Length: 354
Image 1 (cartoon, helix red, strand yellow):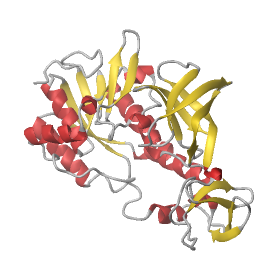
Image 2 (tube, one colour; image 1 turned 180 degrees about the vertical axis):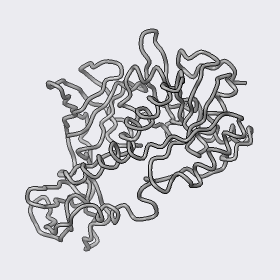
Image 3 (spheres, helix red, strand yellow; image 1 turned 45 degrees about the horizontal axis):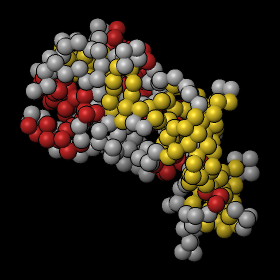
Image 4 (cartoon, one colour; image 1 turned 135 degrees about the vertical axis):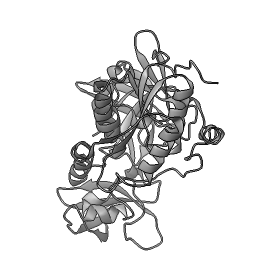
């Protein structure tokens, strides 16, 4: 059914593809589709944290590899993950920013260490279960949103460069999640009805706020409204993020949202209700840019958090940064998060919000 399918790239049939098998249904179906298309596959389970290497995920990944009759390897990237993802996350929170570990995991691990090792072992390409699409326009590889807009993961892939994109395959990007599960059931894959994993491996079953408070020092400070009224206390501005509503410990029946975090005065500023003007930004500066298809000034669409609808904006270059001016002010813009730039469904690039 799928034989000869190129999945949007110039990779030839019978290429050697190292497919990342997470133990979930998406990567399982990605491998199965590539197998049917005639590729020479090697399944790889990536270990990123102590305690994960003997868990359920690895067992399920191995079961899929055995059913597909493909070689199975385990890559241990615990050191790379701690240095490139975990330490980055802790450092960003300590600097009162809101990091995105998923973006860094893709950059440093899946399309960093994994890609490099796979190529060194003879792979022509790597494949993952990401919901995204690739197309070649003859001289470059373009990144597009997946057909399933509820599962699209391009927000996490903006750091990919042209040399890396040319070595990638995203087989499930053409399908909806429901269709992926149907394929898994038809192929009788052991992960067909497995629930999607949530959260970060190293956190485990602990509340993330509790986990973070075990890593960073606490420091009590005031919680104030936009007009300076003192309405409560917090235990450290690093433990809160812009736009956060729950966990503030403020009573009175009024919903409050974090609007600003002042590390100099150790003050948390909150907006009263979701329409408080202090919660909204008309424009932002974006740094650490990566352009997938080349920079262009002018109109585009921007996504400032995962699953948020894209919003219209204007881009202008300011030295090594870009200024993004929203058509309509946006609520809860968090420094440290990614701003990903689109032209309709095509990803232009992205960067980090200052």
